Length: 239
Image (cartoon, rainbow, N blue to C red; front, side, top):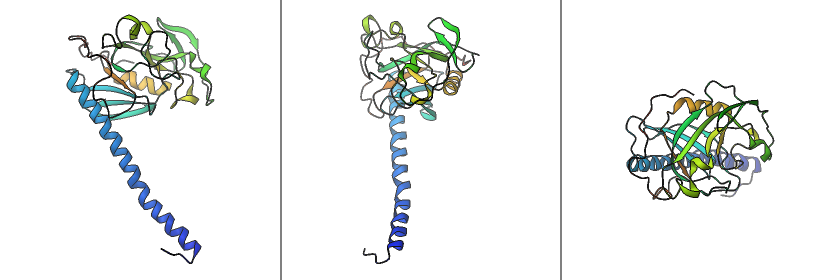
């Protein structure tokens, strides 16, 4: 097409851009939704949890956590996984991958920036940090703490890859400025409001799949869980 009137050309191209952009966005959303459903179906087939239709899926590539119920995405939040990347070894400060379950929940009723440790509330309160590159702000565990237990012996359970021994959690953070990018020492960090909502929504025993990227589980990374290791559903969803 040859345009002799520049203003009309600009207007025409703008209309074309508006016409095509939604289709591209829709394709991306559809693709991501299909990937989430594939992952959820895979986990449901491999490790069914009767009575608990919830699944937490952490996508490291996108730095997002999804809560699925009956295979459908209910909500998603930005997170921060390890700034050193992916890894299961003790002392690596990396985020482990594979299949886990929530073994313990701590912090119910605490204010948003209350500081916790592996024993529970510490009595301190963190100050929120909004800087975009302040890794030191990730040193505090705040708000709520969901303890992860690995379900794959030799991969994220037992020996020098044991997730409980590594103290890997999903927890709140004061480092709000880095959510959506890697910033932790291995844990999955969330905004205080997000971790409160998640803690309220999921019982102990809820499965967690941490994956390098969506839609390509093929096999869950690592060894299959040992028979009988899945905790039965617990209806207690108090935060």
